[in-house]
Amino acid sequence: MADVSPPAPVSYWRSPVARRVLAGGVLLGAGLLAERLGAGHVWTIPLYVASMLLSGLDWLRHGWKELVHCREIGIEPLMAAAAVGAAALGLWDEAAALVFLYGLAESVEHLTYDRAKRAIERLLDLVPDEATLLRDGSEVVVPASLLERGDRIRVRPGETIATDGVIEEGESTVDESSLTGESMPIAKAPGARVFAGTLNQTGSIVFRATATTSENSVSRLVRLVETAQKSKGRSQQLVERFTNVYSPLVLGAAVLLLLVPVVTGGDFSRWGRWAVVLLVAAAPCALAMSTPVAFAAGISAAGRHGILIKGGRYLETLGRIRTVVFDKTGTLTRGRPELVVLELADGVTEVELLSKAASLEVRSEHPLAAAVVRAAEQKGVATSGVLSGFRALPGSGVEGIVDGERIQILQPNAGGSPFGALSRRLEELAGKGVTPAVVLAGDRLIGILGFRDEPRPEAAETVRLIRSAGVSRLVVLSGDRPLVAQGVARSVGIEDARGGLSPADKVQAVRSLASESGPLAMVGDGINDAPALATADVGIAMGALGSDASIEAADVALMADSLEHLDEAFLIGRRVRSIVRQNVVFSIVVLAVLIPVALTGAITITMTVVAHEVAELLAVANGLRALRGGRDHATTAAT
Image 1 (cartoon, helix red, strand yellow):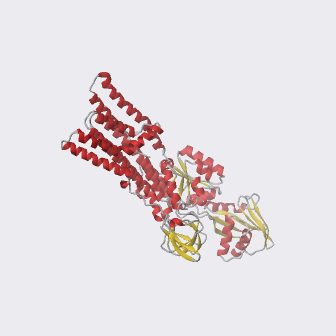
Image 2 (spheres, one colour):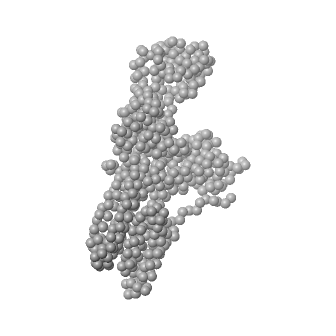
Image 3 (cartoon, helix red, strand yellow):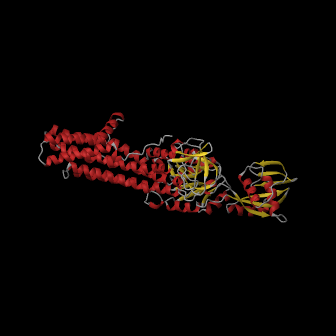
C-alpha cells in the first residue's frame, strides 16, 4: 500500500516569498556597495529597481487586490506610493531600502503569525504514522492515513492511538492530556470511546475505528481552532475600521503636500520629501498588527489546554467576564446521584428497607432509582420481591405492590403525604445538599432515603482559581430543590444558589444577572442548558471531546469532562485583552512621535522606515506572548 500521508510543511524561509525578499536584500546591498565604490547610476539604478521588484512583488500584489476587489486603501498602497515618490525624487537607495525593509518585516510577521498556528497544529504530530490493523485473523501494520471507518485496530501498551473508535476487546488506562489537558489517565473498557493522539498505557486493546485520520478528533480540533483564529474580536474590528478611514486620509494629506509647491511655486523636492516621509511615518502597520496575532496566539494557547474558543470575539469577552453562572447537575457535580443516607424507622432493618425500595425502583428509569438499586447490589441485598401495579407519580415519586404490600417512595413536596413530623429532618438533609425521599409500607413510614450527586473533586479548587482569575461573582442555577442547590453550592465555596428553576427560568436568571453585573459566562453541559448557554455572553460547555452537539451549543468548549482548566480560559482572555490594549496604545504613541519627528527632517526616510518596522515587529512579538497563556503565566492586569 502506498503512503498517502500529507507532505511535511516547508519552512517559511525556504518558501518562494521569503527567497524573493532575501534576494531583493542581496541586490540592495550590491547597489549600495556599487554606489560606495563610485559606480554611476547606470549600474546602481538597475540594481535598486530589481531589488524593489523582488522585495515588493508579494506585498504589492496583496495591496493591489485590496484596492481593486475590496475598494480599500490599506498600508501597502501607502508604502508603494512612498517608494515611487522617493524614486521620483532621485532617492533610489532609500526607495529600495523602504521596499526591502517593509518586505522583510512582512516576512517576519508571517513567520511569527505562522508560529501561533503551528502551536496548535503540533497536535497532528501526536497521531502515529502507522497502525496495527486486524485483517482476516492476522495483524498488518499499515499507514494510519489508510485507516477507514469500521477497521479493527490493536493498540499495545505505550503506543499512541491512531484514530477515534470504540473498544471491543481489552482494558487499559489512556492518557488523554494531549487533547483535554486532563492530568489523570482514564480507565477504558469495552464500549468506551478512545481518541486519536492519546496514549495507551497499561493494557492491550482492540477498537473499531469510527473516523478516518482526516475526520478524527485531532484533525477536527485543529480545523476548529484555525477557523476560530479567523474570527475577529471587537478590538480587531474597531482597529480595521479605523485604518480603513485613516489610510486614505494619510494618502490625501501626502497629495496635498505635493500640491503646495505647484500652487506656491515652492521647492518641489523639499515638499515631495515631506510627502514621502509622511506616507512612511504615518502608515499604521503596528496598529494593524496590534490585535490579530494576539487573538490567534491566545486561541492556540487555549487549544493546547483543551479549551476550544470559537473566535476572537469570545476570547475578548472572556477577558471582561466578572460573573460566572454554573449549572449544578453534571457541571459542579458528577451527574450520578448516590444513596448516602439510609435512616430506619423503629423495628425496620436495613436489609428490609433496601429490599422493598430496590424491588420497587428496579422498574424505574429515574437516576435516583438507579442509585437505590446500585446500593442494594453493593450490600448484597436481594431485589427479587414480586412487583405488580408499578406506576410513577409525576412530581411525587413511585408506588407499587411488592410481595403483596403497597410500597411508596415519595418526595417531600408530595401534597397530602404524612411528612409533618419529619419536615425539620428533611430540611436538614436538603440543607446539606442531600435530596431526601420517604419510604412508606401501606400508611406506615419505614425509612428515609437520602441521595446526593457528589460535587466533582476539582470543583472547589476550580471555584477558588476562578476567583483568583478576577471573577467576582459566582452563581449556581439548578432545577433541583433550592435547599439542595444551596447545599451543593456551599460545599464548593459558592454562596449564591437558586433552585427549582425551569429552563425558561434559567434564561431569565441569566438575563437578570447580566443586566446587574455586566458580561456573564455560563458553564453547563452544552445540551440540556442550551437556551441559557446561548443567552449568556459566553456559553461554556463541558466534555466536548467527541461531541459535536456540545461544540455547537457553546461559544467555548472544555474538551475534558472536567472543570480543571476552566480558570485558564478566563486567564487567557484577560492576558490577550491586556496585550491588545498595550499594543494599541503603543502603536498610537509611535505614530504620534514618529510623524512630527520625521516631518522636521531630523531622521531620513530609511531611518523612518527602520523605526516604523521595528515598532511593527515589537507589536507582533508582544502579541505572541499570548502563546504562553494559562495558569503558569497568568496576568492579573486590571481590566
